[in-house]
Image: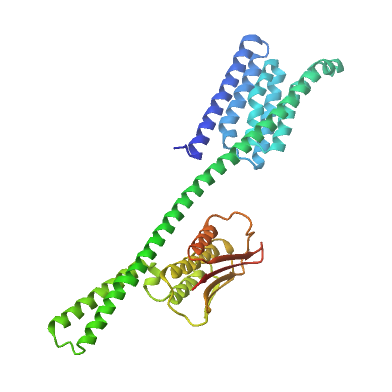
Amino acid sequence: MTAGPAPRRLMDEVLWDVFFAAVALGVAAAVAAQDPHGRIGGLASIAAIAVLYAGWGRRVERRQHQGVWYAAVVVAVFAAGAAASDMVSYLLFGLCPMFFMLLDLRPALVAVVVANLTPLAVGFVQAGFDVGYLTHAGPLFVMTAGASAWLGVWINRVVRQSTERAELIAELERSRAEVARLSHEAGVAAERARLAGEIHDTLAQGFTSIITLLQAADPALADERLALAVRTARENLAESRALVAALAPPALGDGSLVDAVRRQAARASEGTGAASSFRTTGEARPLPTAVEVVLLRAAQEALTNVRRHAAAGEVSVLLAYEAEKVRLVVRDDGCGFDPGRRHGFGLDGMRARAGQVGGTLTVRSEPGTGATIELEVPA
C-alpha cells in the first residue's frame, strides 16, 4: 500500500523545513562564534530571513508574482547580512534550493544567480570598488553561481521526472482497477446472457411444448389432471420468462431494445443542454440477448462520453436493422478527439464487447470536428 500524494507532500515539506532550519542555525552559530564585529547585523539578517520564510515563503505557490517579490525581499535582506558578516554567505546553501522550490525555473535561476553574486557585489563595494578584489574573488563566486544554477536545473528535472513517474504509476493503478472492473463486468454479462439463453432455449421452450401437446390431446381440458398439468406448465413458463427478463440488463427489462436505446438517447441532454434525437430504420426484430446487451451497453457508453467530454450542442442516435446485421450509430458535434490516442477504457470496453458477438466498432473523429461511434453486429 503506497502513501498518497498529500502525506508524501507533507513529509517533503517537513524535511525541507528541518534542512532550512539546520542551515540557518549553523550559519548563525558560525557568525556568533567567528565574527564578533558583524555578529549583530549577521544574526539579525538570518533571523529576518527565517521570519520571512515562516510567515510568507511557506505560503508562496509557483506561478504567482508574490514569489518573485518574496525572492527580491529575501535577497535584499541577505545582501544586508552579507555586508555585516562574510559568514552570512553560507546561507546560500539554504536560499538556492528554496528559490527553486518556490519559483518557476527561469525566475528561480535569476534569483539564484543574483543571490550568489550578491556577496561579490557587497565585497566589491566594501573594498572601495577595487578591481583587484573582483579579479581575486570574482571567479569563485561566478563558479558558485554557475554550479548552483546547474544543480537547480538538474534537481528541477529530477523532480519533474519523479512527478511524471508518480502520475504514471497512479494512472497504471487506475487502469488496472478499470481493467479488473471491465473484465468482471464482461464476465458477469456473458454468464447472465448465457444463462438467459439456456433458460429460453430449454425450459421455456419445453414448457411451451408441454402446453401445446396437452391442449392438442384435450382442447377443452375436460380432464382435471390435464388441466392441472397445463396450469402448472404455464406457471413455470411464466417463471422461466421472468428469469430471462431478470438476467437481461435492467434497461431491457422494461421493454424492447428500441425503447431502451430511445430512453438512453433522451437522457443524453441531461446536465448538458445538448439537443438529442433518436431514429430507427428497417424492421425491428427480436435479437439474441447477448447482442441486445452489447448494443445497449455501447449506446450507454457512447452517450456517457458525450455528456462527460464532448461539450456537444447536438447528438443523434441511429439504430438500423438490416438484413443480416444491426448497426448502432452515435454522432455528436462536440470537441472531438484523436482516436489514435489512449482515452481511457470506454472504447476498449466497447470493442471487447463487440468482439464477443462477432461485431466491429468503428470510431471516426478529429479534434474540433465531433465524433461518430458506429457498432455493427451480425444478427
